[in-house]
Structures are given as structure tokens and as C-alpha cells.
Length: 269
Image 1: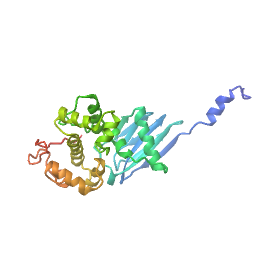
Image 2: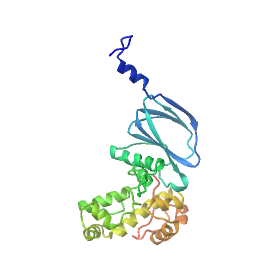
Image 3: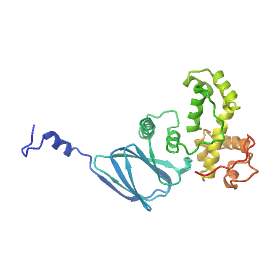
Image 4: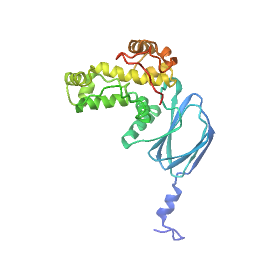
């Protein structure tokens, strides 16, 4: 079927149904970090000294206080996310573009769903999204890794998100083994019990976050504790000083040692 001018009707309808371009004037948020997930098309972001083109499958992270404007292209869809600074501990302090996988996108959709509807997963999806954006930034070579496939899979998941609150039995179920076998693998292959290994992963991430200026309260929730007091006790037991004291000590202070006995010198990434 054709229109009077000879243009196919289907093509004309497509033009009429096009998602229009949108321009958002410069704005700035002083109480939240921002992340923009480009689901379709592209968006040009302008922020101090830079113009960043973000394409489908990418996320732009903008730290708190970053002025920015947006030019969303026609037929493009971008999802904005707000991360309140009083509950967000992160090592991302510069505008950063991250490419995410198809599976990663499910976590971004779940976070949007949990904030926009009454459907809210029991898991801390925001923490998982932050782990995706920081992927590779919080790994520590000081932590021994198990070699057997089941224990290695659990260790990799915990390095990705040390705050994951699942119990040993839950992890064993996920990798189709028993709790006893999982515990035995961690102890024989790393020299640490599962609980000790997970504690060290949490404390090393907490140390990085504190060194990067994150508030104790936000670090508490990021590494899997429900209350700052319980986190502070665990941190003091591991490092010998409180989180607030640790945050202001020089990074090469030899008086601060982890429970393994090694001097703590945590680089900022």
C-alpha cells in the first residue's frame, strides 16, 4: 500500500512513530551520584571539559556534583539512576563509561523495577549494580583463591560482591555441593575457612572504600552489614583500629595490620 505521493505507508507510519530527540539543559546534583544506562540508540553527555557519546549497552557514571547536559538522539532510550551519597560507597570518583553485558542489563532492569514499582527483590540490587560498574576495581591479589571449580565459582562471586549475604549452605546449593565439601575446599586450598575468607574479602573492600573517602555508614551496607556498630566491631577486630581512624591514617602506616598479620597499604583506584 502506498501513500498518494508514492511513499510506502508503512515507512510513513514509522516516521510518525519515531521517538523524538530530547535535550536536557545542564543540571547538577550535590546529594547523589548519577548513572545513565543507554538501552537503545545513543546520547551525547557534556560535562566539564568533556563531551561523551554513550551508545547502547553502555553506562555512564557521573560522580556527585558533576554538572552535565544531555542530547538524547532520536529513537534512543536512556535510563537514569540516582545513588544517594549517604548510602553509596564506591571507588568510582571520575566520569566513567562502562560496557555491560546482556546479563548485566538484567540487574539494571531489576534496580529500576525495584525503585519504580512494588516489585522489590529481597537481594540488595543496588549493591550488585555498583559491583558491575566497579568490576575489576576491588580485586586484591593478597587474597588466596581456591582452585576447585565449585569453591572457585563461589570465590569469584564474592570478589564481585563481597556484601552478598547468602550463607554457606546457600552457596553450596548454588554450586551443587554440600556445605561440608565447600568448607573443606576453602580450608584446604586457601588456608582459611569460608567465613574467614569472606570476612577478608569484605574487609579489603571496606578498606579501599574508606581510603577513597566513603562514609562509614555507606561502607557498612556495601560490605554486607546491617548496622554501623556491627561493621565497626568486625573492622576493628580485623585491622585493629576503627573504620573512622583507618580512613585518615597514612596508607603506609605500618601500625595497621590485617588479621593475617600483613601491613595494610590499600591503593586508591
